[in-house]
Length: 363
Ligand SMILES: *Cc1c(COP(=O)(O)O)cnc(C)c1O
Image (tube, rainbow, N blue to C red; front, side):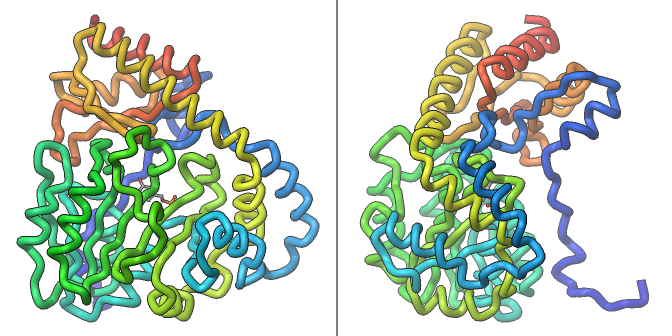
């Protein structure tokens, strides 16, 4: 190509989203397809969201409220902090990108686990930074290894807790020990996309004790537990000085009007939220039990998804499951050649998944 591109981007592999339902149905001429590949909420979202969004439709000729007052106020109240500590994003992906653009100069380093959520690497490289990746240790974040890789160029550290794709977690003790070893001028981004599903109180939660450490940026999303993935809305909670930078560089209308009202309505419906979490836990217990009965080992999880070792080529099993109308994730591209990742579905979907897997593995 005659145009000169950002060199960092040349080495990027494009993000591979889960296969969309309609596409798979068309390709294999299937009437019914289920998707347990993108950690979405199988129950949908609160009926309140539906009502609020339909009501807001009449104002869609107007630009969104840039300050997102209702949502920011609600989040400030929920977490007992000030609006100055909140940044809203077009999904938490957006905030990951803002952090990279706001805090990386050319050649600056961002540390992250390997494998990781791909958006970290994509955003770091787009901002002309250098991702420095630290392999997992027995499916868990290698915090010691990350500390060892800190250099004078390190500006950001990405931590995911619970971890995607393995479901592993970092305890309060582990996190505190790690944070003590991180220099004061490095931002520690804690991506808590799945924190709402955590059952163990030992698992680190960055918002349990509000904002004592200026280095910590917490990322949260409405895409998973709240079921709003299609609306694209997430948020970061952080020191006001950091938030000010991100708010200065974000697109003024990065969170659209419908996403704003959807998020407010979702926060207002505790009943649906609790039902979602409870149903996730019941599904996990059911699936783990069934799979262990087939002799399939599952990695422990504190999320709404888990990895399972099928002891055979995950790419092939993925394809065979697709043909039966069940979309899961092969972990082959992550270096886990015999592992699948699945999220919890409805009772019916869980059952369909188990039947399909049994068939494919001839169990
Ligand atoms: C799903 C997910 C997110 C959320 O992304 P959104 O842009 O908010 O939809 C963030 N981080 C991780 C690790 C995830 O798996």
